[in-house]
Length: 207
Image (cartoon, rainbow, N blue to C red; front, side, top):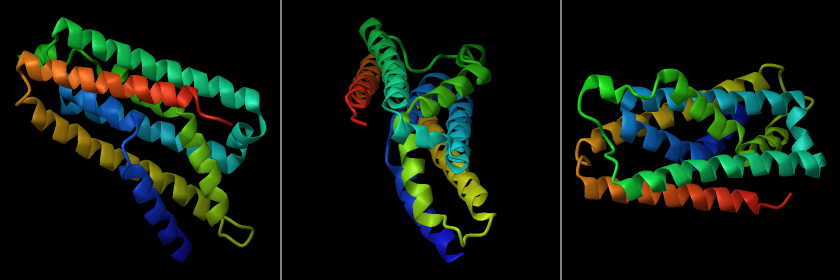
């Protein structure tokens, strides 16, 4: 339990640091409401579960041992973030509203689309894989119980979902004050610039 508690403390710090998942959930919730943002958060959590399970099984060690695998995933993730950033910057240039009037319009992004967006954001973030690869050996040893690795993976996924869902609902509340075009331009422009910056930084990451 002491080892697991130590892991939870480290994981909590990692979860609250804003990253690509945070901004995906933020923009999804601002544009399409808390429900869509929650589905995006669920997608990010599932992506994190996949990374954690892959690390426990040893698959993610390829990122450390294979420069080709690292570069391929890194560039895919960078391209995805840049695409999201360009979409947000185009919305800012057009003056698109962050929120839409009417329930039918607010559901224009389906739960499945929002979920896939969250999954892609997490799975294509090579740093999540490296985080898990670096983290697991620090807490799992030959003397550890067999329940520790799956407990770590499930706990991390639950924390990601809980934190990002809080972001989703907070952003949805904030969106009510952001119906003006000037505010929408500022938010879309800022988020778009952040996505492009994160994508560029990821593309330049070294193995």
